[in-house]
Length: 226
Length: 226
DNA sequence: GCGTATTTCGACATCGATGTCAATGCCGAA
DNA sequence: TTCGGCATTGACATCGATGTCGAAATACGC
Image (cartoon, rainbow over all chains, first blue to last red; front, side, top):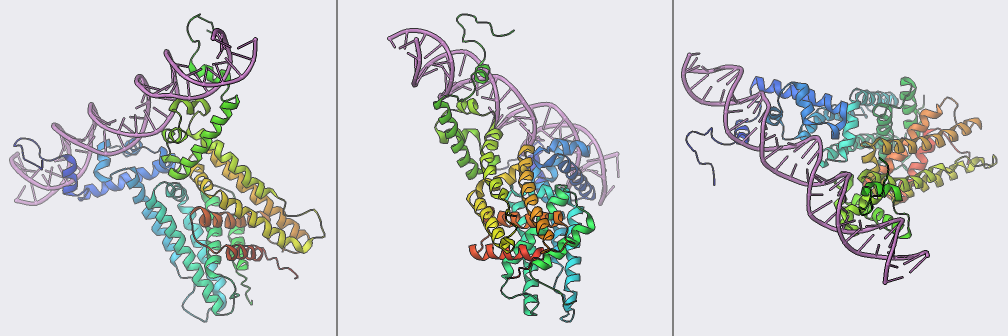
């Protein structure tokens, strides 16, 4: 049953060789992998996840069908690889502490919030095509679904930490439930960005950002003693 | 070319007969259609849109494969029929005028808003499985995508009309851009409902509704002279 | 310029869901 | 009970994307 070695034959299946040698280890391999990733991204953005075919990806890359499978097990696996890159950017943008170390900077909170939301929106705009696809694939593949949930958790946690801090300083009513409020604000900002950038609803750049900022603060009842 | 009548042969293709006779006109036919719709809904909710197979639907209904195609052209068409029913409920919930006729009821606005949001959330909860699927299919089928956009437009328009009315009465700052603010609030409520009911994030019923209400009002800077 | 490690090639087998159709079954009206 | 419109049946053809594999090509150390 297990691998005998008939003298002349090339030995083992191609698949076995592939996993044995690792895939794309050499410089050449790394370039090929990058090329395939770039092509895949183009095809996905053009055709959507479901309509994208491996055949299109390899054609765009100018390589043969089989080469694709040297580097990825399936269409889904390339997509995951691509979304990982984007995800990192998003999480980075969301991870920047809103609180700030200095207790002194009490009333700069509004400014820091504004900056943070702007950064998030800019990252969303930059990657809008992939983030739109992520919404699609999140409903199809559990692993990508997990990633979307992770984004949201990061966002909600950052916001609820801020709210608690403001409540500690007496700047926000303690009656407000921080977790629920954070969930609602994350929904507001995230879904607004989705319709604005991914679905193409037109808004005036500055007006939208300023309005979002102002509503965010009003929603938690934060009123700066300016 | 057109329908001659060779004596013995059954005449025309089955497909032609189907479109000729209409599908499910009789009482019997209407029952069959309803049965298939119910089975389809169960299968969709259990397996998701993509993994649902016509074979599963007919098996659950206890009829043969071909019968399905007497009533629907494809899996997509059944889904559209199902989502139409749900969509009607959602639009109804969103269509109830927030303004109210009476100019007198100035300060009941908050109460009416609360009622309206609660109604929306209840409809969402009731149909959460299909609405979750709608989010999935909206990214796949343009027609269902249109329907989702329509929901949103109804929601946004209702809210922005309210905001304008409140601005007219001097209860909300005229500086606030009604359309942008309405888009953000619709995003907040709609996406919160999605994560709450469709994705199963746990929230305390009463706390969530009250918090959403309070934030909604705070976001537009409405402060009741209570 | 030889040999081995690594990558590429592309024709082909596979696969499962979809939609079709000719034949048969059902049912109410005459 | 018989007739004809209407509905059901289920085996089958179709189809296109996926992933495989044996063999050829390329790189590169020696």
